[in-house]
Length: 212
Image 1 (cartoon, helix red, strand yellow):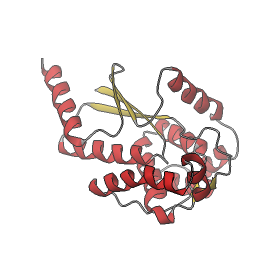
Image 2: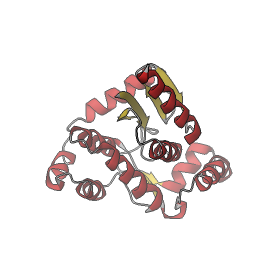
Image 3: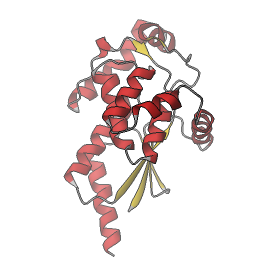
């Protein structure tokens, strides 16, 4: 197996798009060699724990409504071309994603990481749910086969919070400034939402190398 490390944030639309491209390529190459692990990167590490109103967040971050529309116009267009249904109108809050990253970490310990990541993207972008909310995270965990009582207990405390922050800071120290960021075999870095065709080429090249 070849390690594929993915740095992402479950409220990052380009991460959602990038995952859909990767999924499409891997479905076309079921013999792919990747062992995937997801890693934390917060787009907004200074976001208040309770999150904030999404309209206020976008206008503050992008300099007003026009700036927000300028940034999200291409995102909406690319998502539509990728066949993704993002319900922007339903997304009323921008959450702090520390707890979502903690859940992803715990899911990894149980071998359920990718299903949980998929569910978080779906909950936020398609269902407009607040993935900073404990009840939402517990529901996501339970549907992925995790113990909801244990997840709720862990979320009620600070378990692994410092570790998540440290891993985020380590990524930034290594030069990661945006996500998604894909690291193949701890050697090759692919930044941004890469098209399925490129992933197909990567998979085929790796498989050829393995044969040799």
